[in-house]
Image 1 (tube, one colour):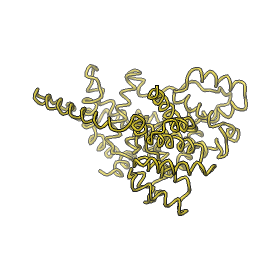
Image 2 (cartoon, rainbow over the protein chains, first blue to last red):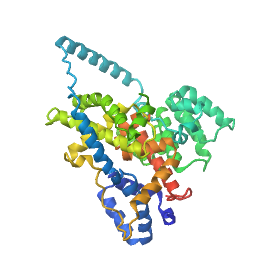
Image 3 (cartoon, one colour):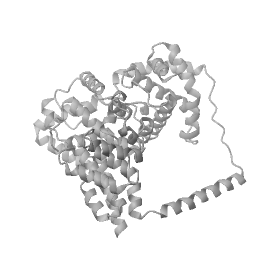
Image 4 (spheres, one colour):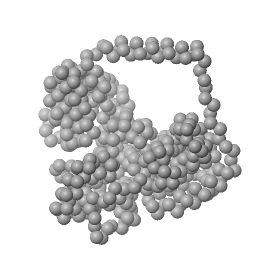
Length: 261
Length: 189
């Protein structure tokens, strides 16, 4: 697979999108034309797309076992009584009225709550999503019971001071300022979040391309919560490296445009 | 029946063990399908519900027996309901026979004169999946082999939402490529 080392992340993302069925017809045409002109690249792509074609999908050699199971289950099912659907409960009219009153109360209450933050703050809150740590992708045995886990469990207010202290004491790598920043945002402490994320950005080269996109994204949310719409826009424009985050940032920028205009 | 008992039963070649799972989960899953999934205008609803339940159980058995699914991250009925609901959605897009087959792949990006041996590719990939770490392996298996939608995948695996699961899948694929030898750590976009 040595030739495949030449595949760039952007090209790999295109192959992924092609097999997910999300690559546009224009992009497919462009990609095919590029591969036709570069034989070496085409060989490398063929190696990797074999993983999608043969590896990441049900194994056709299992189909014989599938047929045998179908037969076995069909025979078993014939011996069992039919399953009757659960009867549908019909609400009487006065119950409908009670439900309607409850819904109305919820709507009025919701409207009142939604009116409280500014539109920019609300956008920031709506677009906040928990950032899973890389370590969480390891097996359970690799996880430790510590401040980071508090953050993983959504206990943000308790998590961010501990994480920040541990980075300051040298107990943790500086990338944990990202998780401290996200936890601070989750705990509605945007000024703290901005400070952590800005400090992390200052430590150039201490994070991956994926993480850099996350830092700009959450920094953008922190600025928004603080009401600094222009600063937020500047950060959101810098989000790259992670397609989903890029899409979220683009969507948020569009919503901010509408808010301003 | 504990999760471990269920996994053993799904893996077992003994008819009695699998039969116990079938009988235990048949009624709740079929009721779920009839009550919440299959359109009331659909002809032969009861037979279709049985078929969808059976097919979803077969998918789970295959994934457990192949070793791709080594642990259950939710109750078995959650899996059965989610897989059978997705099968019904596939049935609406395709026909009564084809929906049970894996989705057709698009044509290859590169036509090669000497294609690789599919079995060798699978073995290499499964080997790398084992090295990937439990969390990533579960995410890729749920997406590619159980064909669950993102909302269900996020719910079953404990991600905050579908976007979070998608974002993690991208990172897991990057790790898998690194293990597979495609992307070295210093490569640039």
